[in-house]
Amino acid sequence: MKRAVEHRIGVQAPAEIVWEVVSEFERWHEWNPLYVKAAGQLKIGTALTLEEAIADRPVKVIQPIVQDWVPYEQLHWRSQRLGGFVTAIRYLEVENMGESNATFSNGELFMGLLVKWISKDERRALKAAFTAMGEAVRDRAEALWQARAAAPSEAG
View 1 (cartoon, rainbow, N blue to C red):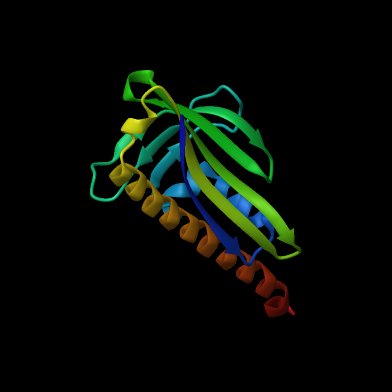
View 2: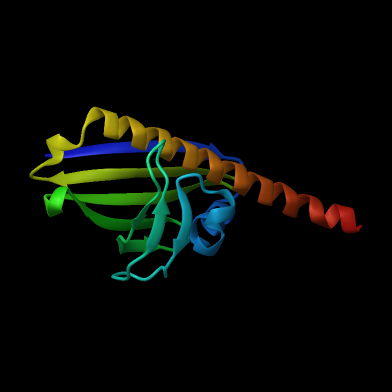
């Protein structure tokens, strides 16, 4: 059995800028409402250390394992829930939609024996958190793109 929660959003900035925002863990605390602190390397098999802030819950430290990553396209990490009876695959994906447009998707796929115990309330809270993160990625990438596009004309 599988369950998924996902948010997708269009971004008016090049995919490279969106990836820059997503891949710079050391700056996540500046803009990311879901992961208020992040550390680790983009390397398959390594652990990330993330401070996760969902709704009104206490901030929780999680240490998922990087499962897959493709520069400028995707980052997937894996964690266990419900005593290891549920595997969660968290994904952040950037799709190039043109010279200055991209789509950012972020979500989580749940698989395992106890998936049915991932409640509707839990999925609703995750959807809101993923939406907030998606909007924050969009806002940051668009601001960076606008600032960089304006920089040469200001210097002239």
